[in-house]
Length: 157
Image (tube, rainbow, N blue to C red; front, side, top):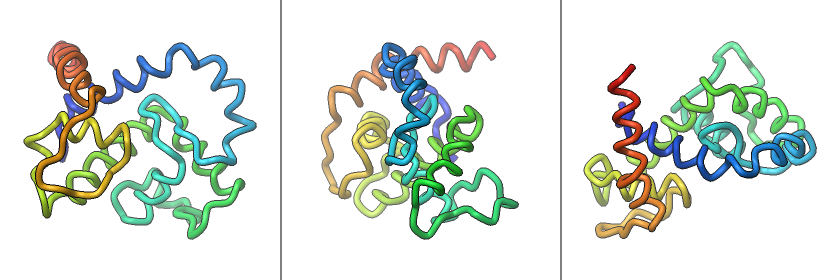
């Protein structure tokens, strides 16, 4: 229950920022996956994905009894990485993260009415809720440039 156009705009932003480094990242992923790296087209961090599963917001495979991990080790990160690298799951994790941020901030502000703040928080982390948050330049860019592009593409589907 989130704005699919904003999700699309955030993914466009993540892909645009990732593109120049994609070949290098792909070559290194097998070596660095033991770290809390950002993965996939929506650049979701492995630890964040595990937290979303723990909180019951999104589970990529309810039959997988290994998930969620109480404490992530390199083996656990490798296991979760296999889900995150799949575009379908990566997009659902991104949507779950957006929902989590909206709910986390709900006591102070309705972020569904402030997509530039939501885009900012997606890129920098959930932050601490406050009544009058300011968007980052990146949050404004996502809303101003990538939101209309995502809307156009989704309208054409």
